[in-house]
Amino acid sequence: MTAVDVLVIGGGPAGLESAYSLANNGYDVAVLEKEKNICGHLNQAHSLFPNFQNASEVRSAMIDKMTHPKISIHNDTEAIRIKRDIDKWGVETGSGKEFMAPALLLATGFKSFDPKYKEELGYGIYDNVITTTQFEAMCQKGSIVSPHGQKVKRIAFLNCVGSRDEKVGNHYCSRVCCINAVKQSIEAKKVLPEADIYCFYMDIRMAGQFYEELYRKSQEVYNVNYIRGRISEVSPTIDKRLHVKCEDTLSQTPMKITFDILVLMTGIEASLGTVALGQQLNISGEYNFAKSLSLHMADNYSSHKGLFLAGTCKRPLTLPEAVADARSAAGEIKNYLKTLKQ
Amino acid sequence: MTNWGFHIAKSRIIDMDTADLGVYRKVAAKVPSAKLCLMCGACTASCTARNHTPFNLRKNHLLFRHGQFKGLAKEFDKCMLCGKCRLVCPRGVNTRALIYNMRMALDNLNYTRIKK
Image (cartoon, rainbow over all chains, first blue to last red; front, side, top):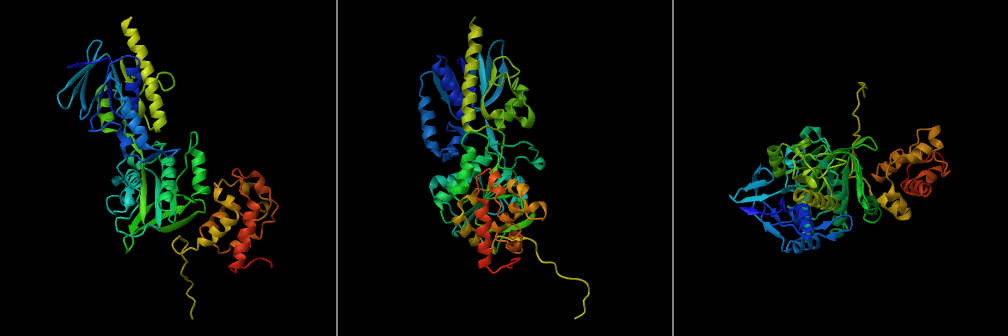
């Protein structure tokens, strides 16, 4: 049994930032991370929008913060069962460990939509249909190659895969994929200046500081082509490239075009941990994201006393938003712990 | 030959693999602001010629981008180069220069104009 002041479930950017903020305020914090490494989805990022900061810089800064003496990180530790004692939260982990604290922070994050459910897009059927995560890994290696060894002349990015799609049950917009598609288009052009980059979209949603400017830059400097229309069908050509069909809705004409690589901008869904713990705690909201007490007034609170929420377990957020939300959660937890002492 | 009243409809699909996309690149090199077009349609909405003809700058610019030149020269000839569209463009596209350069490019491709 480990007793601390605050238990953080999830060692992604939100969990870590809250832990650091709380530790700086003198509280003992334990972070439970189910994976081998902390930093969550940031481990799969090469560069970050909108300024192309190297993700490894942000990762090492986060890992440095975790050397704080008040923080204990528990890797390979998945929270399985959560119970509420009178004034304490108890967490049992998959490895049989037990933790206890007066305040519990849920920062269990998101998972990417599995595009194999959109069979018409050919993911899992054709090797050169890849996800945005796989493309990010290519950028990290600095070589964008077709699995069939052809020279990559054309790359397509398709937005809203698993977002704004009633067929897969996700009516919402994942918010980050548009910005990420624009960022990755520019990355692609940096690696392959001769390649033609196409971006298929229903709406380009670039809400936020510097994002619209990034979109403009992609058109002005990097000659990225934007086609308004959703790809309806992908089929292979005889030389194993991808034949793509869509409607160019702005000219109201059907269109066909061949690509070497198709990148699917997969949407954000509640992670398995978010779903499981949310249901266990009875705080699951729409689409199984964790539901906060009040969106406008108490967004880090849940309906349980001493249970707080931070980051993308609540809804899709960009990295700066998730980290800012984590800091605000830390502030709320600090206030809560003070009231307990009184 | 007997006319049976049937004919084969030509494909309406824009085939980007066979389209000549280089023409647009040349125009965009001369009028770099063309690349900034957001397809908002403000140009078309403000167009003087649009009041009396089906001329649609936004759509025709897009078709030109995609190398679909058929019928475009006649369309662009409806423009009087008054420049109202340039006043309303939110991205500052030099629409007048764009139309003029698209016309010139089509001239070089020997597409039929309304008048010479």
